[in-house]
Amino acid sequence: MHSDTTLEAINLTVCRLIAESLQRPIEEVRLDASLDDSGLALDSLSLVTLNVALEERYDITLPDFISEEARTVRSVRAIAELIASRIAESTKEGAPV
Image (tube, rainbow, N blue to C red):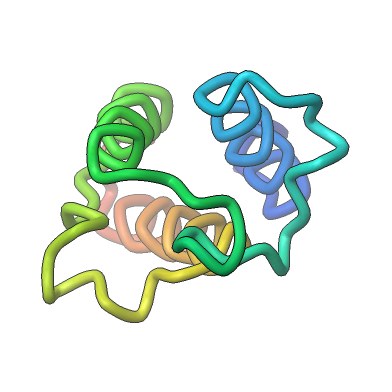
């Protein structure tokens, strides 16, 4: 497994991308922060932009974060865990990561 695909590295990348999107310091983006109005207040455009950036970064397909399919993806940690899971799936299938 590549070192940038460890859960710790994925956590950092997700936090960094969210911080950039919100134009906030990365320290303000906690793993347990929710994506909705009660937490980071990411709007639908920010979620779509984050989704595309993560898919391109890790060369994986993710559910659209504003869709019903992704309704369980509601925190920074949940996004990072989903990415780690998708990377593990693609590695098992022998697909390039």
